[in-house]
Image (tube, rainbow, N blue to C red; front, side, top):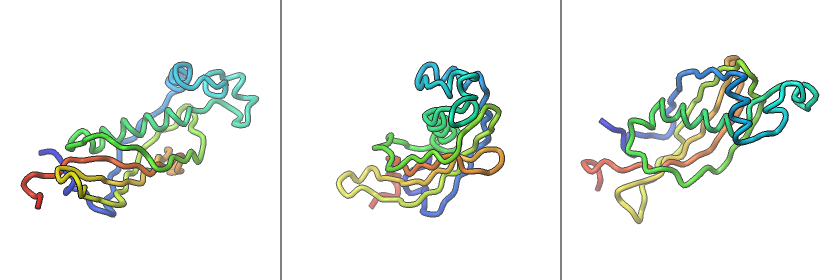
Length: 151
């Protein structure tokens, strides 16, 4: 049975499974989407501000999206998203890191103009294997309302 807007509540926390990140995955993503040398070239990366190869922040966002799908989104009446209010990259993600996501529902708002849907606001933390928060996202998702519970 899918989850509807009414199945989310402020304060609800959903934890994802862990996902490891390899050097090859970092380089492949960066070559395609963010070819800065500290993402694509190990030698150049050692001379960078970061002192070594790191993942693109956009790759961390993409991994977050996959973890969101795996954790709960695949079992919802999702209608997409109008966007994010804020993305913050707090710490570099390195080859060999294992990432997981913690999704906290901050607000659930039924639409006033479209009674078949509403918005769920979330605060997402991406954590590495040490429990360090490497990225945060304040996002919005649109979800269908349960026809049996609509008033």
